[in-house]
Length: 249
Ligand SMILES: [Fe+2]
Image (cartoon, rainbow, N blue to C red; front, side, top):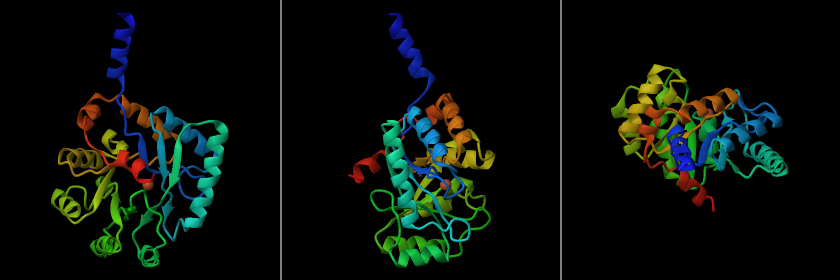
């Protein structure tokens, strides 16, 4: 009787996040995420403890600040994969990238030098100041080449996040939307929080990501997991995250 009650309380206490994270800056020393291998392992262990079982690392590819190539990213992936194996963390790790939409991205796209999430999804981001001038064209070009664009954290772009019609149009045009879990906690401010909630209520969100860069983010995720309002909001929401594991074979 006692253990039954104990278990009931436990389920009320926290809720399950999707087991697959498709947006994380956990490869060491190549962007503004984990700086060292040690830090990568700390983040991965914390994500494992939060319930994640498959992580897809997505370092920034932004020519001016983070000129990462597929080769650099895959080399770091191997390094971290070996380290988690050695440490005995039972988690699957893959890598893609978070591409900043600019001319450099257009060139990579033309050459098909794109690291995709499983299933041909391409994670892209824009400036927080202004929309990419050829945003719609880029989305179109990606789909023409058979890729499936996923816009990272649309709730964080001030010029877009209050415009639900524009966001709906993006979805209708074949662009998936990925919100950051921490937006729901208000981590990036009130505007992104309200926008993320609205996108969930309108069922416009395809994927959720941690966008984890450092331990402060993982610590916030523990808070989120105990938040009754967020649990209620996300209850039974069918995110595409879980399908990614099957797509990667
Ligand atoms: Fe990111």
